[in-house]
Length: 375
Image (cartoon, rainbow, N blue to C red):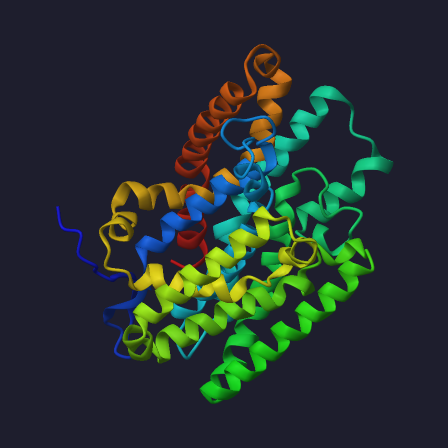
């Protein structure tokens, strides 16, 4: 088995008539860094642990427990990775209609399935109330719940990040094309300035205990923009990155040790500001390293089975709450099993449901919609 690093290029082909009426096959190639796909699985599982780790071994042990309480920061990793992947696979020209449709077909079918799944489970324990549920359902259907702090975590609460992602997707073509017109230095200055500004603003409002800043998409936009900047850097300055790869690894190790110290000591200032993108540069650095690593372990990330786990990670993330509710409402396993046994049984069920969702809903619906509207 070869563990050597090989970048993967995929292609999408269309049969289209040329000026003479003859059929021509036009193919668009895009970069696929398969080893990054598996990191989505790791991040999704970590967020599941964050939500449901109470009294679960080994996450309840002293030392590990303190670190587990910070795992929700990996939502910011998703935002950075999203901006990075979109950027490295977008050319100079961008078809707005096709871009928005591809994003819709990628996230909405399973998102809607998870929402309906959650509503059915709620109906099992109480009738839906117009005065209580109407706004929650309406905002969730249109992916705008994160704009209202009263409803950001309504129903399927991890879905607030999809609401933020929808906003990022809406802005991406304009931000990307705008940055393309600037010199690389000005791109860096603009994005870094905006990121610093938002971190200062977030810290000020968080200190004043303003809850709306935690989930509002505007306060996570700089995280997504750092991913875009990272993608532009990867495309335009890859040779420089490779020349300084060892230094990047050393910097990541030192930064990780500092962050572990802050988490283990439960630093109050760090706990107040970590949620909204302050770790974006660290995540971007880790993405660079994984994307270019030639190590045996990271190369294993790019094999088919780990890649597949990354492909079902969206289902793991968006279905974690309805699957947990299903097990706690439809069975008495939580009351008769040890906390650790129930949690790991739940994870197995979540993986199975995510695979079924991916094979029967996510992938087929995406292919059907794209063939239907962009044949």
